[in-house]
Length: 392
Image 1 (cartoon, rainbow, N blue to C red):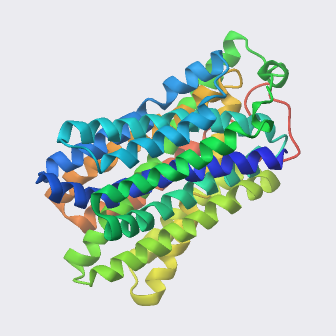
Image 2: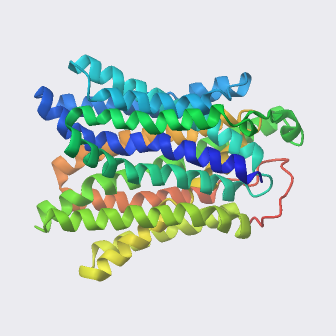
């Protein structure tokens, strides 16, 4: 594993995802400035999600067919540039354009970044991918804090400060040569069979894995969306209580991302994912039926387990598509998580018609469906040589 290049890629992921976390915190300022409706404000997020998530497989497709290493320095810069210009948008149309620009930067960096990490990680792929994920999670957490700080002191023009990390990351990439070393996928992929039967089995395995990622993503997004409303509207708690729960949930999730990969490399991919999905539902129900500190502890543990398998499912997806690692990365991180967001939107309709408690309990069941789906997923892939990691 080349740690120097990995650290550079983690830093790029951190800078890129700062903008993802900052955008929602930026929206109240934009809404008041342009007197937008809630629908118009939500459209900004929709445009960003489409450009940052749904089109990721397109970048992955081109990354697999042509050398696209230039996306590594370009992605963080474009993502930062789009968000930085958002506060200067003179009209709603320009705001949508800048949000889309930032989203394109996001979409361009992730498939190429995950593909490069895969090629450089050796046998401990889940460990390397978990570290790469950590950079993104840390950036996502830092984004809202920086947004609040900049806009409190500089107003809407404070968004320009977000351009600086992008420029700095661009400069680091351009003055560093290590990441430009070409890695030849054929040498990695030669050990995989590509017969018709094998291809069909890989396609089915990938489809099942994407369903698992969609269910896991929908669970996490629905918790982030509906738990605050549950505390404020149903339990009549102070908004600060909801904020405390979400902060602890996200912080423990970051710990889960870092630890999940090494555990999978040690105990096996499939066993680790099944363990995390099964325990997620258990601790979510324990959270729902308890109160006080005990409830917070159960919610925190659920946050740790729910995304501890992120790096593992990414490594598995890449192994199912060994000749299209960039495309696999885009499908899992972009398309599947984007569909998870659509499922969360549908759960909003459920909340409007059947109430928040019922909606939350549906969210708690989704990891169990993911568990049952994953239980029948064949792994390792057909004809893949066994690694040092045990597999059940």
